[in-house]
Structure formats: structure tokens, C-alpha cells
Image (cartoon, rainbow, N blue to C red; front, side, top):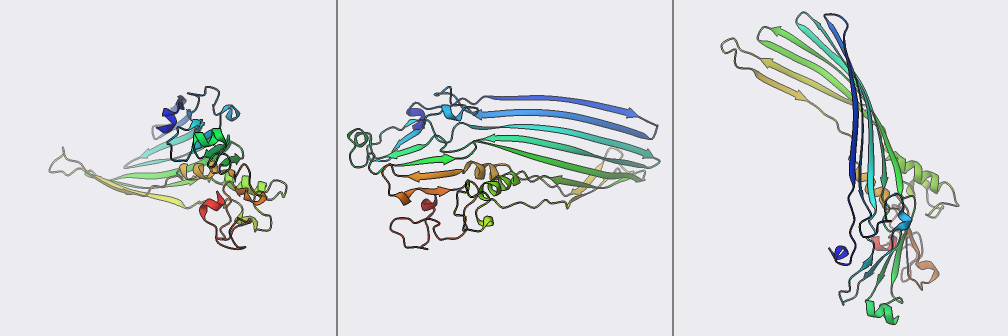
Length: 324
């Protein structure tokens, strides 16, 4: 609300496009095959508004945010550091389903391949945030103005091109055991690619090069990078069910079933990690060791400070703010 009162707001443009095709052929009186293709692209962004040029394709067109943290309740001005942001989700799916019927049994089997291409645009503090005391302090260059102010600046790519290949296959047997009882027995297997590994690849490439590394190279590489997520190939999901139509009441059908389902990772977990990019916190008139860095997805787990901080002894534990 404070940002809106100070004159900052954003538009939320969104579009979705879909296309699909379905081909079905009856090969014999017992066998039918279906082939399906679909593509969908969805875009949702928070951009523009009060600053029309501040869009996800032009982060450089966004102003910095200036906050007043004193006691005068001065309104902030500039753009909000969390905007622009948004994502494009492009999903391609190819699927095949086959049905074979013979006597009292119906076999259903098939598989699919999905490819998700989801570039995410977000980089907090990319254009900087300056925290000051009060507006009068700033104008007069007095205490609480520029002498005790500090700024937050981010470093990194505003766009992370996440991608994820998914594969699935299934088989099910529908068996009419008696005129009144049909049994269903099947299994589904699914594989979900680990989109978060994009952050692992990016941080390893950055920290392996001394000229681009953010954290001290004396620290182990594994402590300076996003961990790699293992691929999981054991998502076997049983399907068991039945349908019972008792002879004493042909209008009644009793159904029961059991299944296990697997879901892909929730993207917000690693989107938040991606947007927590390298940022520097510095005073406009700081001693040389007041610039403290935070690397995207790569924070040393050691509780000791990687750099000297005024007022702290070497090796003394850092507060979270000391690493922000």
C-alpha cells in the first residue's frame, strides 16, 4: 500500500495460447490407437504501470527504490525492488493411448512425453534500494541522511531459463471376472526432470572461475553453489479397483479403488532461490570491508563470516543480516 500511495503500481498482463491435435485409428475389431499432440503457452507478468518502460524485457528501464526508515513517516519513492517479475510457461505434450479388447479383458496402455520450458524473470534489488533516515535529513545531508544510509544492489542475470522434461508410461487390465464384477489392475510410471539443477549448473560455472566467483575461492566449491538434485526414476504408481453390479439390483453399481500418485516439484521453491541473487550491501561512505556479498543459491553453510565485519572478531558467528 505504501508503494501505491507513493505513486508506484504495476500492470498484470497475461495471455494463454493453446493448440492441439488428435488422431485415432481402429486397426482391427480388437485394437484402437490414439495419438495426441498439444502445446500451450501462458504468460503472466507484473510490470509497467507507473513506470511504462520498467518491463521484464528491460530491467534497465526501472528506477531505484528509495526508502525512508526514520520516524517522520516519509513516503518512499521510486520503483518497488521486487518488480518487474513474471514467467512464461511453454508446455509441449505428445501422448499415445492404445486399447486392446479380447473376450472378457480390455488392456489399456500408452505413454507420454512432456517438455516444459519456463523462463522466469525476477531479480530483486537489480536497480538498487537506498535506505535513508528522513527526507529532511537527506535534503540537509545531516544525521540519518546519506551519512548512515546504506544501499542494496543485485548482480546476476534477471532471467533464468528453467526447463523440465517429463516422461510417463502406463498399463492397465480391465477384467470382467463375472457378469457382476469387473476388476481393474494397472501401474503407472513417471519421471520428472529436476528443473532446479539449472541453478546448480549456473553457480558451479560461476564459482569455478576465480574471475567470476563471488564467494572466497578458499571455501569448498560445494559450499558456494546450489546443490544438485538427484534424478528419481522409481515413481511406480499402482492402480487397483473394482466395479460391482449385484444381481439383486442391476441399477446399483459399487465402485472402489486405490492409487498412488507422484507430482513434480513446486516451482516456487527454486524460483525464490533464483531471485535471491548476488547482492551487495554498502554504505555510501563505508570502510573498504563493509561490502558484503550474497551469492545466488550459494551460501556457505559455515556459521563464520567469510569476510571481516566491523565489530566482529575473526571467525565469530554472523547474523543473517551480515550476509545480506
